[in-house]
Amino acid sequence: MVNGPTPTAPGRTGQGGGLMADAGTRVPQSSRDLTVAESLQLLARVRFGRIVFSRYALPTIRPVNHIVDGETIVIHANRATTLSPERQVVAYEADVIDEQTRRGWCVIVTGTAELVEDQDEVERYRELLRPWLPGPRDHVVRIFPDMVTGVEFIDPDDPDDYAAGDQAL
Image (cartoon, helix red, strand yellow):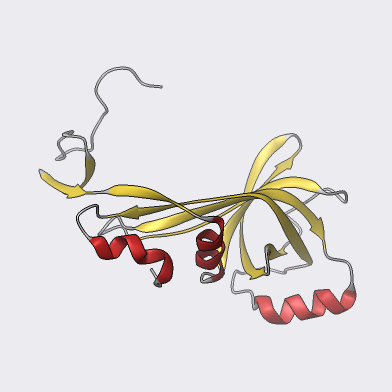
């Protein structure tokens, strides 16, 4: 934690209370926690996120494509995403945040991951995943959530922002 005033970028003033869009212009911003259902619904609307797992006892983050299948998240992983052959605790994050308006959302799923080994399931998931990240995708991994958290960044003065869980952001 840093003590003292928060540093600001050149040309910005540190007035607090919201993010700065332009020098001296305060953008009202607030956040609200999302329900598990809202979080999974938003996660299902995007195809890309980041998996966090342990590799050589250190946290490792890799971009991957995903789908939401019921209450599980399924990813197409390459060889660099070396998960343990046993179930491994992972985190999965996806977000959509507009840099201009500073509005959007972030969802984080924490749970156990395991390789999908049933060949019928692997083929089904490969068709559904349609990966667009470069490189080979050798593994299909299923994440069983233990904890799903989400936050939405909203304009506190705009009542329509509070319904964003029902809208495409």
